[in-house]
Length: 295
Image (tube, rainbow, N blue to C red; front, side):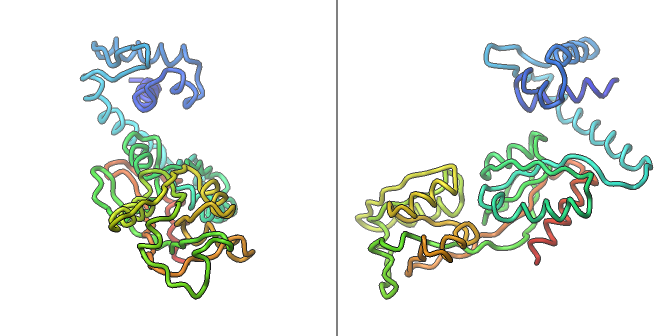
């Protein structure tokens, strides 16, 4: 069987769109269509229902998907073990929260450009749910998660480090007074600009605020660290973010830390699919991530 057919099949299963699959594979959409039709003819079954909203796996398609991924993993292993000049090359897709993408990952990529110039790292800024979906679908090779919980079906994680958190506001905010001992009751009536649902530390802060008797916080959720940080710097409220994302603004006096309740550092975990083979390029990215966070 031509493995190109399996590549088109798994890409279409991931994306649900012939157009998106073709773009991912750098093929014409008509080529992907021919690949799927050929594979269905060879197997004697329909693999996708073609709907106005996209391509949906049939029951036969769902049964085939895991086996097709195993075959492609095996082929990749053979190619990796087949010799060559020993140069590690390839593209590695890494899902990561935006805060790490902006502050930690540039140094990792810079180090890899020197040590393994043929390895191309593609970053996808995403929260935990999207990262887990990407690992399970094969869209991502690795992911970084800011999570306490590690009970994820089909995904294994290992701790890399802990990211300290900082509760901050603008210098002119009423809670910015350095001598003030801020309580949960004080915080529970303030405006907060937090990261989107699924951000573990933002969700935990919301839970603790709403648990205060008579709480009436005004909570605004953003998908962007920069948006939350900018609103707070403008004096509109408070935010809780990894210290690395506000360190520069704190140093320049645009933000100040709020004294009061403490927040435990959030674990940084490296995640990968439990069953999927880790290619050499992904292995060297893993090694650099471990080295960077250990330092």
